[in-house]
Length: 207
Ligand code: FE2
Image (cartoon, rainbow, N blue to C red):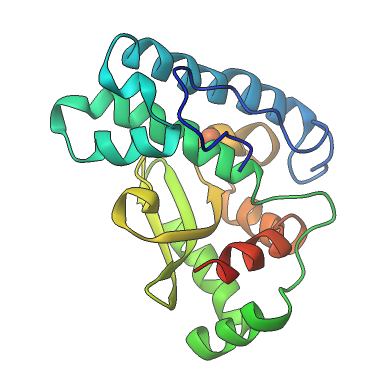
């Protein structure tokens, strides 16, 4: 994650970990410019506006997400902070010339928990496609068990005590300019060509 983990009074807008055309042709530079420069930026800006002069202003973004998730009165803060966190995590789930399959311990764990990499990829696509409306598809570690799941809108496994290993954004703003309504084709292309399995494996090692 590029977001500083230390306590801050101000949530910083993280830079993309690659140039805005690095994920082409699956995700165009135009999509990235709107997605990172407008959507993600707005979530960060709104979070900063909403936490101003509140006790949350001294917390890290991760701490704000977890705290606001427990308080119905802070739903707007949760939605914006969780989207800021989810998007930072999303950019860091992808890389140029990614995709393929993980190696080492993570691949062995996937084979044990899903029966093979192809089964995991299919589960991710199915979860992403069946998520009604906006949301996210995730590979998470749940107390030593790998699971595929999806969340609606801004919801995040971070607030559920799970350890996210990778995510795919299935809000329309993530793919509509490039794939229109073909969410399944977009998700398959992301899995085949963009997932950063080295980062997912590094997160898995920390579980
Ligand atoms: Fe998004």
